[in-house]
Amino acid sequence: MYLIEFFKKSKSTLIFLFFFTLIFVPVLYFLSKPKTELPVYNPADVNPRLVDEKIKHITKDHKIAPFTLTNQNGETVTEKNYENKIYVADFFFARCQTICPVMAVNMGELQAYFLEDPEVKFLSHSVTPEIDSVPVLRDYADKKGAVDGKWDLTTGDKKHIYELARKSYFAVLDEGDGGDQDFIHTEQFILIDKKKQIRGFYDGTDKKEMQRIIKDIAILKKEEAE
Image (tube, rainbow, N blue to C red; front, top):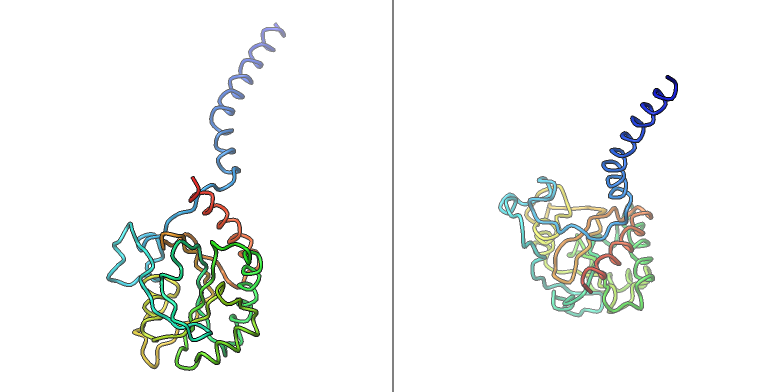
């Protein structure tokens, strides 16, 4: 009698273990395995508040628009300077005393990590370009340790920069036209691949997020090598 009961219980246990292995083990593996690819962000994939009304419907092929800016050396910087580069973009202003200093430190640490890697660059856009002249940017770049050719701190036409922030990088929630009274302020770091596609958004004030950027760039490089 006891023997029969033992085998019944054993059979039930074996059946349970079989189905557990069949169903839950693959799920656990999927959840625990390292991330091997990054999403490509299009307007339809992003918080609608971040996206211009005219492009919210776009579900594929979004790329950073062509741009013309001026860096800390008075040199013209365009999308061609970032051809076949992975880069991290952000928005700042030199007189900012809140989030910008922390962001600059974090961007500087990323720059140091990738200093000898010619595939990776950094691009900062001034949100007060009428104040952040080339001499101001030069002084700021020197104080923050920006390496020429590796990290461009840029000024330019305000409407152009603000349109990039809102229609290309999806970096800010607020709306505006880039006019005199328009002002954006964002902690976002945005990861751009060699195809000019957005591959990640990060909190530029969070040290842990810098480690995530480093890992994600490694994923991008592996993806592009395959």
